Length: 192
Image (cartoon, rainbow, N blue to C red; front, top):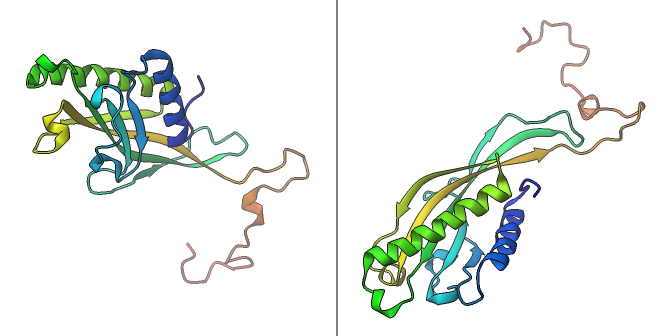
């Protein structure tokens, strides 16, 4: 499986894996969006069983930048965006005898959590980091129906330069930039 190049590629990969590994009545609903965690109608099979990938951390910080990796390819990478997402994993044990059994509900969530970690690893091998798993507790419907974990996902995404032709007459992008100090003698302010 190729490495993930965007969040949409990750979602596509996770959905394809879910289609092959879950029966229709148990398949989790995998959705994207900042407003999705508050919705109740986007449940998967079994009444809960959903995975939400929402952009940013809890304070809406999008991520950070790092140096390029594999910069010798065309188009070359000019930076690495370490994009942050919140992954909400909500599951329930659908057996009516277990509805109020917190241990059974947490076990169902842990099982789905393990599947999510595996799915992300298969799609984004070597380009991701999972951090800060946190139980979502409170008076929400999700907390009363099953259990929910929130995990931070950091994806390494390359930011690419414009491709350039691979001919001997091509001009690299740096050569196309007009320098402010062209013809400067070194005595101008800011020159070292």
